[in-house]
Amino acid sequence: MLKRFIAYYKPHSKLFALDMCCAFVVALCDLFYPIIARNIINIYVPEQNLRLLLLWAGALLAIYLVKAALSYVVQYWGHMVGVGIQGDMRRDMFRHLQRLPFAFFDENKTGAIMSRMINDLQDVSELAHHGPEDIFLSCILLIGSFIMLSTINLPLTLLAFAAVPFVVWFAISARKNMQDAFKESRVQTADINAGVETAIAGMRVSRAYSGEAHENSKFDMANSLFISAKAASYRAMAWFFSGSGFLTDALYLIVLCGGGLFFFRGAINAGDFAAFLLYINMFLKPINKFITMFEQLQNGMTGFARFVEVMDEAPEDEDPKAMDAGRLKGHIRFEGVSFRYENSDALDHESRVISGLTLDIPAGRTLALVGPSGGGKTTLCNLIPRFYDVDAGAITIDGHDIRSLTRASLRRNIGIVAQDVFLFNGSIRENIAYGDLDATDEDIIEAAKKANIHDHIMTLEDGYDTNVGERGLKLSGGQRQRISIARVFLKNPAILILDEATSALDNETEMLIQKSLAQLSRGRTCIIVAHRLSTIKQADEIAVLTKGGVTERGTHSELMALGATYAALYNYQFRVEA
Image (cartoon, rainbow, N blue to C red; front, side, top):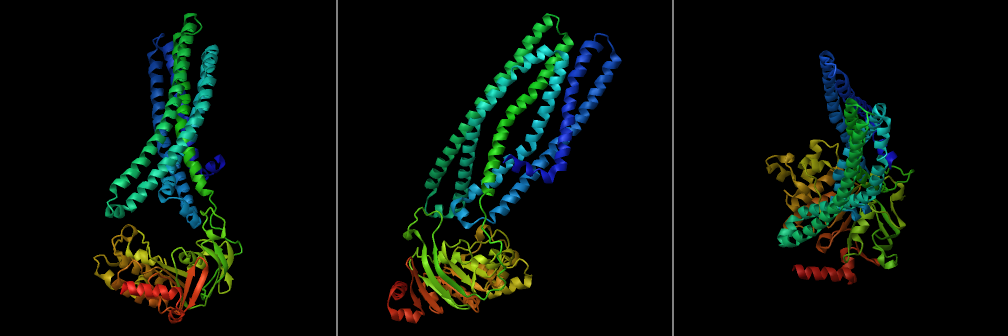
């Protein structure tokens, strides 16, 4: 994992090298002060040499000015290295998410994914900047101060360093508890983010059902788990820092007492003793930095580990020999297709959503799917664009197994209009243009006209530049649906899937949209999933799909004459609607 982390420094190697060089010079600047202070106390003050005193004071001022300039570079450009690495990781994660199978998003909450991308990578950014820099500076100060301490008084130096192993031992032994506690804190942070994201997205529903108290209770429970996890992490951190602080204080006490005894015996003079204490402070500084860095290290590496977990998720598999589909005609055939979702624990026949399905849909024909909920209608529609892959059997289009076609070229030939329309937070123009990102304004307007939404758009103050809001909430359901239809008109696919496209609309709006859908379906292979059977009477063929497969198939009049499941459903709906 460390190798993968280091690889992200490569694009920023020059800036990182500049940061390290400046940090190195800053560390050297810190090493000069005790030497100059030692000479002032031992030589210039006793000899009353004002000229050298002022000269070295000026040299020290120049050193501090250089240090200040280089510290600016370290603080600004060093942080920019971390920001750059964070940006690269976020880019890689986002692009990887675009390639993950739909099953991943079925199992992972949106808020939890966002927490990994934003919160976790922020801590990785801090580690990416401060980690190498702090380690490098600490090593320079440790080595430099040890050398300078040894030149002043070697026995006292060895006495001071004898306490270091105890500090190291404590830090290592306490590290495991911190690591576990911080990992649990990350999990709870992601959970509470996911809960808040869901609660805010569903605010209208909770208000409509007076569910505020229930939502507050759910949040309070998640919040208490978050607080408990944070408390455990801070408890482990408090034990770590208090114990480490005591050991470093004890080390300073040893040097102070030992140096005092050496001074009483004449083994060290006042200037050397003062310089020794200054260098001990400098020696303790990197030790304390190492100790404080453990929190940053735990945060950063835990965040990177969670980043790696996502990056290690297998993307949608693609046959290396897969070919571009080009422009398909749309002859779809299901041959013995079976499928069940990955989160189903059962392996028996009954757990399958689709089992042994064989179905042929000629190019340019309209097939309507009806049947009970859970019969596999929506699943069948999701299998055609390979949102999921079949467990057994094959789906072919124009004689090509869809697994032999690249996903991008396959999906380019398929347009989907679903009941739950998703619009991006942007303008109407941007949302329609999603059907063809290279489309001209004239193409977009023509698509809107075909979808019967152009006239309404022109009544808006900003026209096609009107912002639709998050998920299109500034528009009515019918308006959102017509924009999604315009999007498909612009895409101009060979295959059209209408999954409950009008079931959530009122009758008047449905009639308007049915006209648009009829025009959209013309000349394409069209699969319609509908519970409102009056909307599919004109379909070329209707299939009744249950867990047992296709139990009936024919035109509306043929199925009504058959007097079986479809006829019973239709007559029941007609009686209820009447």
